[in-house]
Every structure is written in structure tokens, then in C-alpha cells.
Image 1 (cartoon, rainbow, N blue to C red):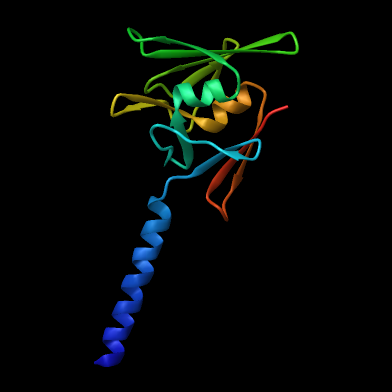
Image 2 (cartoon, helix red, strand yellow):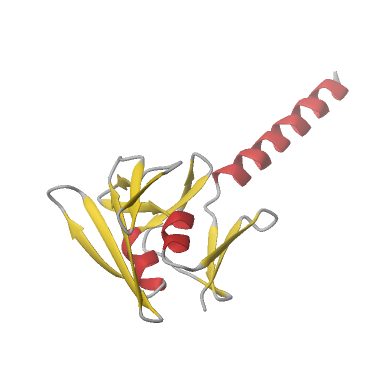
Length: 143
């Protein structure tokens, strides 16, 4: 009976540990500095979603929000080149300079905050993104 109780307690603690790991919010680093957000990023469909304004501004993009169509447009000028990224809440299709691209996780509104897929936005604007699974972190590198 003692072995059964010990086994159950061990299993319960492992389950609690595993659930805590998967429930954690990912950390996001920009050029080695940990970013802070008013609302924490989260994972949806294996994609990290972050607050819209914070991520666009972090990579020096200007954003426009159309509340009527729930569409966000990010514009970034770099080395004389202009890139546009357009996303619409709930839509699995986004646009990079007018070219359609399918998303694994569409933008969403959670508690009156707009979240966008981090990798898609950052890479579309010409920056690099890596996933560090050991530290449950996203690493963004800009030029």
C-alpha cells in the first residue's frame, strides 16, 4: 500500500510539473534583452502570439489599426526598402507586400488586446527569429 501511495504521489508531482511547464508563457528576447509586455505572450497551435503593438514597435515598424475591419497593417522601411504586413483578426490568410500567405495561427483578440503570430510578423519585416526549446524562449535578432 505504501508503494502504491508513493507511486501515486510521484505521478501526481510529475503531472503537476509537466502541466506547469506547458502552461508557462514563453519569454521573448530582442537582441539579447528580455522584452516585457503589458499582457504576456502565449502559445496557440504551436505558434507564439504576442501583443500587436509591442512586437511591431520593437522591430521599428509603424502600425495602422482599422477597427471596422479588425485589420492591422505594419510598415517597415529598411535600407530604402519598404515592407508591408497585413493581418486580419481571425483570418488564416495574411499578406506580405500584397502576396497572400497562410498562417498556422491567425491573429486574435483576447481581453481587448490584439495578438499576432510573432515569427510571421518579425520574419515578414526582415528580421530573424529562433526558438530556444530548452529555455522556452523566442530570440529575435535585428540587423
